[in-house]
Amino acid sequence: MSDTFKNAQQLPGRSIGTVNWLGLYTLYLKECRRFMKVWAQTLAAPAVTTVLFMVIFSLALGGQGRMVADMPYAQFLAPGLIVMAILQNAFANTSSSILIAKVQGNIVDTLMPPLSALELTAGFAVGGITRGILVGLSVGIAFILMPGVDMSIAHLWAVIYYGLAASMMLSLAGILTGVWAEKFDHSAFVTNFIIAPLSLLSGTFYSISRLSESWQFFSHLNPFFYLIDGFRYGLIGRADSDLMVGVTFTLVLNIILMFAVYFVFKKGYRLKA
Image 1 (tube, rainbow, N blue to C red):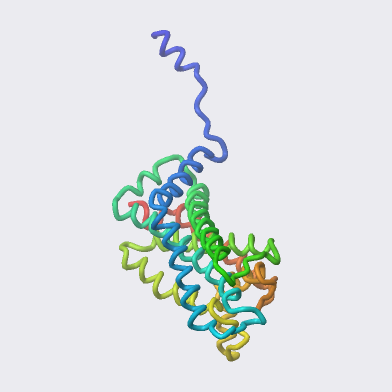
Image 2: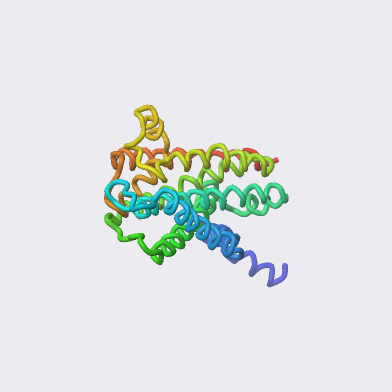
């Protein structure tokens, strides 16, 4: 037996540990580099689109000094538009990442490394959260530079919690959509018939106090309403809902989604042949 072989036998085996931190960080870095390579499309474009929403709706509905909730309409509108941008981009990041990997046949490159189901869940989810938060920050900075929009923070905890909760919820939902979808039409169906309606009917452009009781009841079943209303409370100090109900509802829903994503990765649903 050669000396080289004897020395190789004496070397300790590589131990990854309880958590594969290197693999988790690598997966997260891959997810971030996906959207940072095309930042003009993934970060700048959503910010420009959201600013155009602000300009158009402010001119169309906020003219002649219109006030909503005892404040200028533009100031009321800004928090909802920020959360809408966070929601849409967190969802787009994870759903497109997994679906493209499945369509191109390289999803195996993610499943073969020694990453547990929990590590896969965390890596994909945090990548989507990062994109959602970065888009929200870019939109917020754009609004700061706009005249007539006050972006001062009334309650920092609400801004942080609801911003993270919004990006996490749609990041996890995007993972489930990407795993379930077999083609881009399936992902577009979820975006157009679930995400978009819930976003537009969430109190972004209006206060639900002006709605009838039946529509108010529907709004209180919409998780996006609590995310936008809570984030708005963080900026302007006014909410249309019970904040503790909103925190509890969004927290429980995020936990359920996290367990659902974990179960999907654990079982390899529509991922493993």
